[in-house]
Length: 107
Image 1 (cartoon, helix red, strand yellow):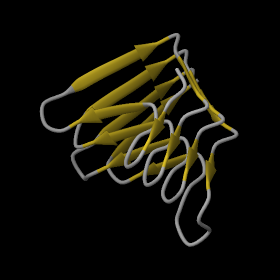
Image 2 (cartoon, helix red, strand yellow; image 1 turned 90 degrees about the vertical axis):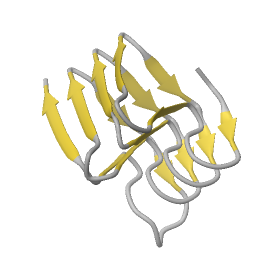
Image 3 (cartoon, helix red, strand yellow; image 1 turned 30 degrees about the horizontal axis):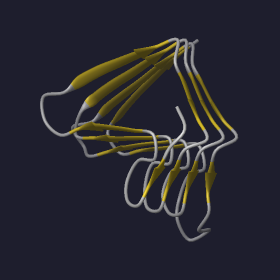
């Protein structure tokens, strides 16, 4: 997928509430957000990536690749890669992943 957003999440917006999303064998690439989460913005929800890649995404503020925001968010990366993503404003955080909730990673 390749998209542009004028706010949060150029590619995928996951949330709010009792939302659980699993992405398997997925490539999230060449997305752009003018605010947060160039590839994926996970807000107050559960997101799992399995055998997936988040690559070449851009956010003008926070998290070029994935932003998982809110204390009740869960981000799980299983055998997945987050690479070559960019947050353009150096005053903000994380070209790859910005996580505020729970993060689990396995290879």
